[in-house]
Length: 255
Length: 254
Image 1 (cartoon, chains in turn green, red):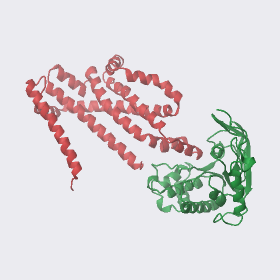
Image 2 (cartoon, chains in turn cyan, red):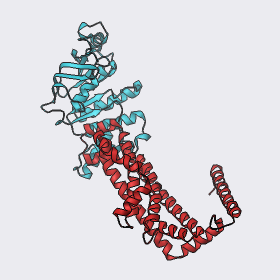
Image 3 (cartoon, helix red, strand yellow):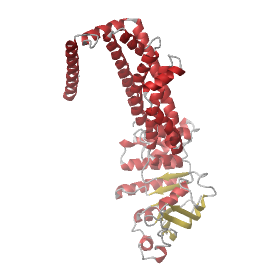
Image 4 (cartoon, chains in turn blue, brown):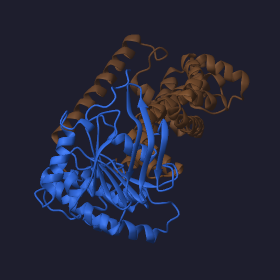
């Protein structure tokens, strides 16, 4: 299921984030969205998840609107219900009609995938930051959906923990394939995870650079063959003034 | 089992405070020299023991307890039912506001007198308790709904969590601490207004009826004994309710 934005316009009271933005995030791939602050990366996720509505244009997940489609969402914070245990947090997003034995089985499988089996009965307050993010990841994968939206879920983690979580994520994605749209500010994360890399320009944003990663997933470190050229082009696109296409487009709509 | 020093100290301070109160009371009664104006603590205790020996006292206590519980339960249910939509919708909140302001600003005695015109004497205390406790409960529920983490609400929306599960699994636990504090305040208020309403409406049985009868006969020690009974009912129910809420919170790990 590809994620499609067709001529989308979105205006907030003080700024037009997009005007006639079009982009296609291909099915079954991990698309990474980079761009300067305020370029509307999270807004794109919120439009695709149905949390926001576009002022104009079309947002499609496959052939469905965001209201009809089912998507998983990994937010910046884990957003676990503090009064429920990890397993109950996963159960919270399962459909009510599912038999008990089936629910238990699904929960156990997803927790195993993110190495959190031992923490099933723990409350979020008893988890470390990394464990809480793993729990949120398990919830994203237990929810029956064809797409996963990720809003900087590894932000603020130290490198070893981040790498460990990225590997956990890759394994879980392998077991439960989904189309992924991953928003980040971090070049390492983009290069390690992204199959398709999109860079947004200054607002009103448009896709000013789209690159396909030459190295298949399972990349281990940014120095890997094929990385430097990619890195150079992304860096240039994000450097204000270095890439004319990604510089400020139309001026911001006055408040 | 050993008792820790801070607990011992706290119990000691409590005992000292009680001793001071009883001392001042005793001194005051000696100074007045009339049990009609201020009976002594021991006279009050004797009267209380005499009162509790009779069946009528327990029936009165039960009747008041029933009325207070009924009024509180009605306001609790209405507060929850209307508090949820009021918390979610500013328009509905605006619609309810004038009613709540009127209830809040009207003197209790005026409400009791009006209720006396409308209802049977048995129902008056229930109605008044309901009306006085309702704004407290709904106010806290609305405040609690406003404090629900919008991030969790967005998460539940994205994951297509049904309305019933969202209310029971997300809103209710978020609002629970607010409900607990509102209900505790409303419960205390309920007892006070139930007894006040009984004093004026004079149902066959009730702490308020007992108080009024004792006052008419100038049996001040008995008035004090009935007052102590009302105080005890209030403390016991509030304590039981707090324990219930604590247990609910602990069970949910919040």
